[in-house]
Image (cartoon, rainbow, N blue to C red; front, side, top):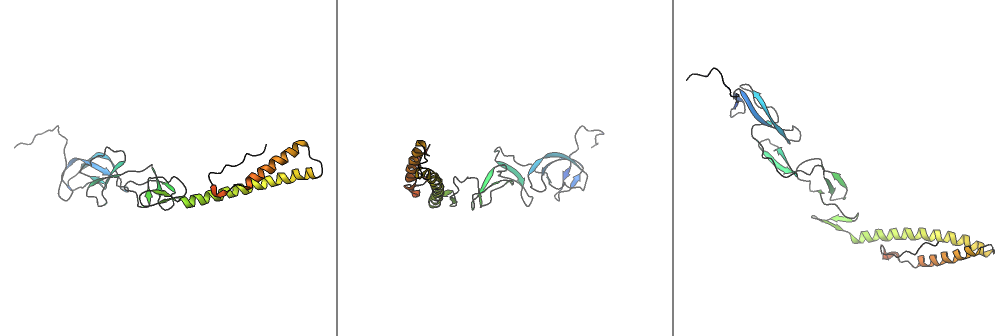
Length: 208
């Protein structure tokens, strides 16, 4: 059979069992990032006889996912393509501390991370969800109420002391006498507050 002098066909390389070209020509390769192994695209490579594919290049095409939350990468041993979860750009939360951190790697999340956000600083991870530690939350609310109450009482005592001195020496104006009564009533209401009712405390209005 006579070989044609010319051809309109693009020469196609043939890869042998060992991965080296047995005939020279072009071959479509499907390429992965050398570090992350993520699929980065296809290209045409020209191979001479005896030459193999470049690092990160493969002759088998991957199946592309339709889900934006999936990624394609080469398996760790390099034998096939795999589709894995892709949470990059999302925020994950430590199941130990609840602290947020950005997801930077594709694949399943480590067991100590979750995409579920804790709803309060007192949430604890039970293995599947966040559960609020009600006792710790209430203790913190009581402590905050006690600190607020102490500050308000100190402020009231300072004003009452100043106005009482003016009344004692008959130097108080009618307005100051009225203010003293308002502040004393306010102080009494503060002293009747039960901080154990936090956070549902009806704080008295500040005297005008």
